Amino acid sequence: MPIDPYILLLLATVGVAALFPARGTVADVASGASTAAIALLFFLYGARLSTREALDGLRHWRLHVTVLACTFVVFPLLGLAARGLVPVILTHPLYQGLLFLTLVPSTVQSSIAFTSMARGNVPAAICAGSFSSLVGIIATPLLAASLLGGSGGGFSADSLLKIVLQLLVPFLAGQLLRRWIGRFVTRHKKVLALVDRGSILLVVYTAFSQGMVQGIWHQVSPLRLGGLLVVEAVILAAMLLLTWYGGKALGFGREDRITLQFAGSKKSLAAGLPMASVLFGPQASLAVLPLMLFHQMQLMVCAVIAKRRSRDPRPEVTGPEPAAASRTAVGTGTRSG
Image (cartoon, rainbow, N blue to C red; front, top):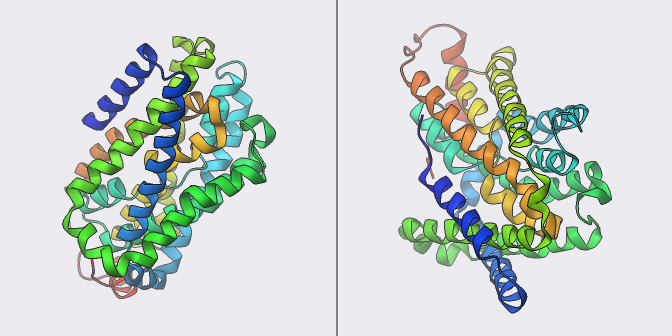
């Protein structure tokens, strides 16, 4: 199973933060740079999302609503169910991070890549991931405030305002300026991808530096980490099975079921890390640890599933499933963004 090279960079960043944590003035500078990088990240998200694609995608609303329900309803329910594992398997801080993991939006890039590899509905995957990211800017902090409460690192109206100013406002600004900068963003995808990943690495360094200074890593043992991995594997398996067989029960065709499985079972590291840094403050390093582990796990497992789906025999041109696929094509259009 493949290991994402970016995960190795993330782990290296954690190691640098452990050996050389930012303190004093350096910490203030790193925090300010991290805030600016997060704002730039979501500005670029807004500039990339085609408004026309989003509006066209709304026609296939049943699939998108199902993906959102998996992301912001079913996942959090599984996270709440894991509360019974405290303190036998999970410590309370690790459980908070696990619950936060279940609240963040779905991925965009990897969902599209795996859907394409498995011969699924790629336009629907583009819209589903984009809608999830947009909804998550508001839904994730609201869910975190209601489910984690004051124990999650100081959730308050001020925290929600920071989310709006740091994430939503730049996103909307990118949308407004897309008319003038959209082509530039499209032409320089590789360079801007480096900006994306560099921003996340800076957020990780800042968060884990704060954790080292606060001494919170003494709370985690290898046994607890092993228990966390097992719990996350169970959650991922449950979501993969639910999205695949639930999609069949809901009458979706094969292509839509593939989109539902890959978009509805994933969690976004790129969106979750900035939110955690705002919502959890000094406790962000423990809060994002479950998300980092889950991110790598979902990539490895979904890569295997996508390769297997790509070898599935193509459906016959008769029967109800091709008809469903035809309705999908009409509903989502043929643009790939």
